[in-house]
Amino acid sequence: MDDLVGLDRLVDNTAYLRGLESDRNKLRLQRVPLLLPKPKRFSALWAAAEKTYESLCEQQPIGRKLFQQFLLTSDPQCVAAAKFLDELSDWSFAEDGTKEKAKQRILSKFCQPQSQTFLSYLTAEDVKLCLSHSDKNGEAAMELMREATRKFLKERPFLEYMKSPFFYRFLQWKECEKQQITDRYFYEFRTLGRGGFGEVGTKLFMRINMFQVEYRTI
Image (cartoon, rainbow, N blue to C red; front, side, top):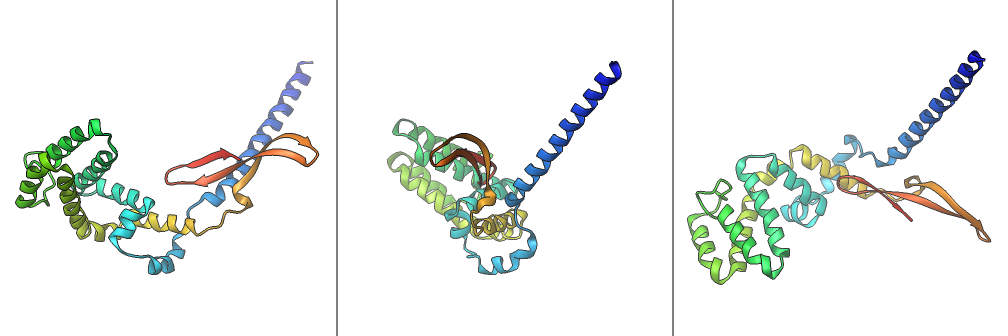
């Protein structure tokens, strides 16, 4: 009797393990469309890419995010510039009650020579103008710092970015954008029921975004 029980358990466990292996293979196949393209396809894509700072690092969300990540791994001057742009974005969307505090925080962190995150590419005249505008016209001070930062980033940092793995990843994502959405991006999740027009089902659509794969019911 014990031998029969042990045999039943062995059969059940074997069936269970085979089921798991089948699920793994199915999941592996579902992930294939989500893989980024291989490097051999990039020569033509690189030749066709618009190589301007505004297009690659400001107008395109993926490019803007990857350029920010590149800056955070670069020298202290670039790190300070990345942090400034991040806080400048927060300031631009801040409500009236908190906007003044955000402006003063930016000026104290990035426009004071004694600060560790001082934007060293700002000239003495830039600093003087920013501080003189801080009370009367905060918008002018922020715009002056923004333009100085853009001018700095468009030169050496931008050239180094285009030689970095971050720009390589940007080209991979641009290649992904060219791919059409087909049935391979969908798989059946479950059947909800049957009616006069056939089965009513739920499918999951796998959508690639910047950092994760989202699953949403449609």
